[in-house]
Image (cartoon, rainbow, N blue to C red; front, side):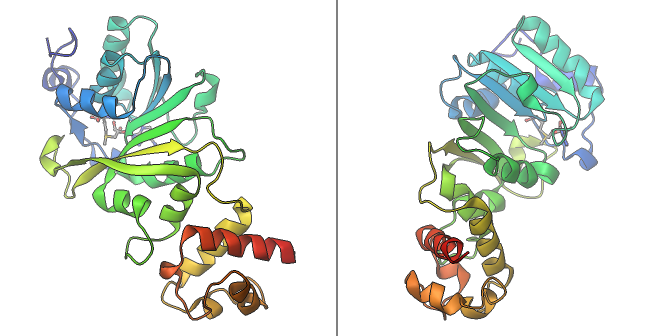
Length: 281
Ligand code: SAM
């Protein structure tokens, strides 16, 4: 018995199914079920929602999500060794957990889920940023999910919520803040995991906004932001020269000094610049 359910403690699960952590799969497991239940609560009310979980491993967060009342959980795990442990959880919560052995980068979760959908995960660090960028850049907005509750290295979490003028400010901040409301909601020390990683971690909660904060064409905005931050130390008039020969006129038109650097420019101004460039064709 483990406190939040009638299943065995995670240390016993790991011993029974011989789940020695593999570095190549970014395996740092959460073993404290009170902590995983607390992380599940950070995703908000789960009772009327399907939850997509990436990388359930031995199932600590999965059990937290189910104990906190998730309607259904779809858990996608790359490591086949974890499947028997996940099957044991599925048996304890009949009809509420579907575990798929596969790569989160290739499995289409929408074939298995019904809206509203929340995403919650202690992400494998090697694919975490790639998945986040995909979830933030769907073809249509609003996206298929209503919120993301995700564990990252603290440094990545800081890049998501960063504001202009800080070192962490860049593409990820602009991408996240344009169409979501991102917040760091929990800090975790390395000792919270087994084995402990070398870095601190943090949980970020991102709520999808119904519409972008400021209008802009996603492709143009992405192109401008990428060009601006690829040469973040250069003044914008030279960093963005390749974007348009009239870049100085566009910068002036939207009130950005051509001598400014990307990290000084806020989201609203980047959106205005994208609109000005789109209008020019
Ligand atoms: N959620 C568990 C926990 O909190 O204890 C495990 C978290 S561990 C940081 C990341 C998990 O993601 C591992 O179980 C790993 O096998 C899995 N994983 C790694 N790459 C994956 C991928 N491409 N698709 C799905 N799962 C993956």
